[in-house]
Image (cartoon, rainbow, N blue to C red; front, side):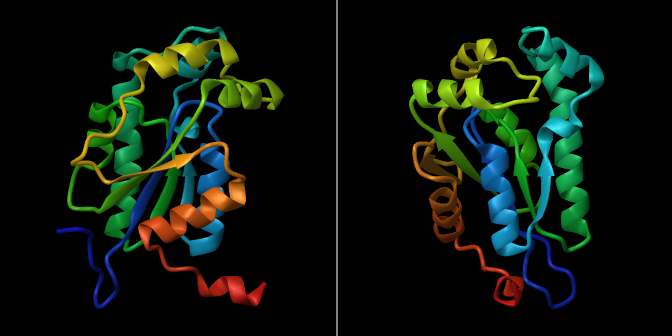
Length: 185
């Protein structure tokens, strides 16, 4: 089954905008949400205070600290799906095993991987303010990143594109319906 149905409604859709820190996941996921009406969530908000403190101090997370976080995110997606609500999530999802946790169950989960040169991402990280993830952890994220395998539903987009172009490419590439609300703006 590719998604849950609620009455006569269409199957829910769940999109994870993935990539290393600084790739633009939140911006693109928010843009997809605005264009489609999918409910937005930021995976960073699911981190425990201990994990945030760890990253803020420049220590990368290990799998032991990531598993509970990923399970909480997967539960959030599953709850929304059970309610007949589609979602879009900004989440690093760096390893295949992490993506596997996020796509467990009967829901359809597609991934949009924002990928590109480390220099572009590093420059973005240097410009952003107020984020706990220091640019020094980019190398550990790049080392952890496992590119999608052929059997995964992952749309890879170039981070060098403008945010609006990335949103349009994601919506089009995943065949997401554009929200009727857009015409009301």
